Image (cartoon, rainbow, N blue to C red; front, side, top):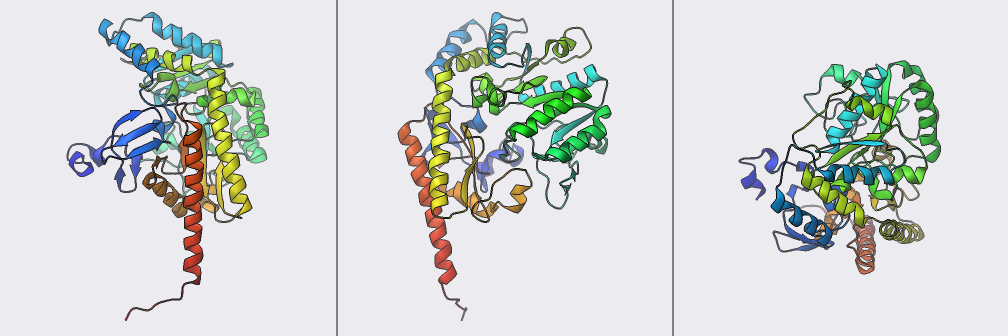
Length: 439
């Protein structure tokens, strides 16, 4: 199927980040916590479209909302009540959000956040954290995946384009900072503060590697950006699933703007930016122009509202309870056997896993992936999970859904123990096996 698709679509499909080894795993359907592949395999979905499907697949609340709306028309340029309904839900949940503007994707909403910051501050340059991914726009696809060869020094990371076709002048407009480097990051912000329109960051990074920011580090960023007049943007595209008030609610720190995506569309394409009314009003008074044919699409905002309605405080408690159990049981088991395998992240429903180069190591910056993560063994774990009935994010992430049961979580924990045990047993066997010579 991949080879056939390559004749008409570059790479075979429009999202080659879903490659799992040499090609993607093609899916025919999903129900609850599981997906069915074209090869006839039933897999527990730990990818969930990169955290989108927080309710699982074919949830009745989403299906019924869409099926009820479709007979009345699919697409209008005219506004309806649905957009305002979802906006009010987000304002009620997210402490920093006073007004909301919708787009088709979080990539677009990140672009809007940058434009708002530039327009309201009169500054041009922006700052971001190394390893932070904020979509594929020219100005933001910088240093999400640098390498030891091009990343520069940790004290002053280089700005590295993650794709060809990004102008050098755009790259020069981006100041890159190191995660959890308290003194170094503050020094760089103060040195360049008069040039910076905004600082955009993920409280727990996703595509660039699962790195959770320290409470003290985030508080420093809030204090310094406020002092220097830099707009602080939290990209909660993924981490909105951390709790009823998003991950910023767990930190208790309020940004100026928040980017939202993934779960707010209930599985349909939708992004949003929200925040302080005085900044958001630039979209109304003519200082900033942003518009798109499908922005605030009727079906997307309806599905999003249906999804958020299901995501009660109790629902988040269930999701995060499963996450804490996975992290606690596997890390305790791993520590007891002195294994380098580790579950990492904030113990919310988006978790990281990695096989470290030695026991006791912890990922605290993007550069730790260069130093202390055994990428080959982590990839082996991902492939083995798929072979044993689980579909994770191949780079070492898992995303939980409300459709998962206690039995699903138990099976995942026991399967990961089995995979790591098998790998470590094989390592020991190879270490003592005598060398052979070809005849």
